[in-house]
Length: 306
Ligand code: NAD
Image 1 (cartoon, rainbow, N blue to C red):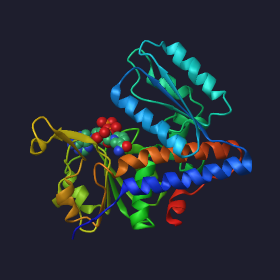
Image 2 (image 1 turned 30 degrees about the horizontal axis):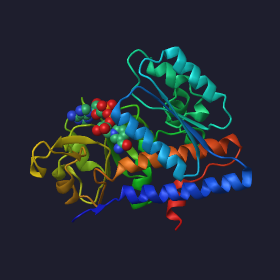
Image 3 (image 1 turned 60 degrees about the vertical axis):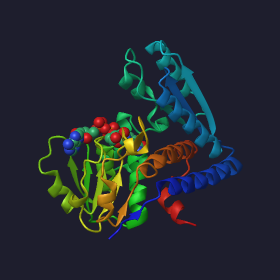
């Protein structure tokens, strides 16, 4: 068996196009322009690239988008004051603070000040609690795991009763991923660095979500035949075959070997990564709609609607 490659790049582009149409409708019918503010402190080049692509996506989605780019030496008090002013700005429905922040700024203090209904990253304790309590419809959910769930649902349909293994228990990926799979009625196992006999857990799983950060650690022959493999990992490794000093990106799964056994598998790059930004746009649209008392859209259903 050679597994079907899940084209996250194409699915994310489709989702962004659907969001752009929905945003236009919101503007025409409710005079409401979804607004997102991205805050970045310091000069980290990778963060700058992420922020630029978030701004570009927001514009493509017909959103109002602003970027606050603050110098590295900005005080914590000034960052908190900016968050407070964005909390009170009615044209802004989503606030995203690019991480990591410089060491002299307390990250949790900043993230916890964002009003939960504008917390489009889904990291605020209120949103974490709502998701954990099974009240997903009231929460804003972290973008990467929400994107993974859409990919799994797109290829498998109803996930009810499936055995799902999440490898990794971080607050931004592993834990919310497990909560989302549980909300989709999977039987969920979470593995982490102290888990024993990981291969036997993988061998049992209908769905494997790998979010570890160790290049190609999940071996192909661990994968159950016909499983769905979602690889969140983004790891840069040396690629001497491409020339001296060259590198390439790989996931946490040994793709070629796993594709021999899986029915569906995401590549790295081009799998989960593009979905993360698309889901950030989806969360911003949701936050804008909720601010006007409108119902949430079902983004998985929107995607299915061609
Ligand atoms: P993290 O470092 O916060 O968490 C890693 C987790 O892996 C931990 O819970 C740890 O217990 C677990 N772990 C470590 N060694 C293990 C082992 N041998 N067996 C089982 N579990 C083990 O990482 P994170 O922020 O969750 O990110 C994970 C990966 O996903 C990274 O490669 C990161 O770059 C990538 N990532 C991608 C996106 C995206 O948009 N595609 C978004 C976020 C993170």
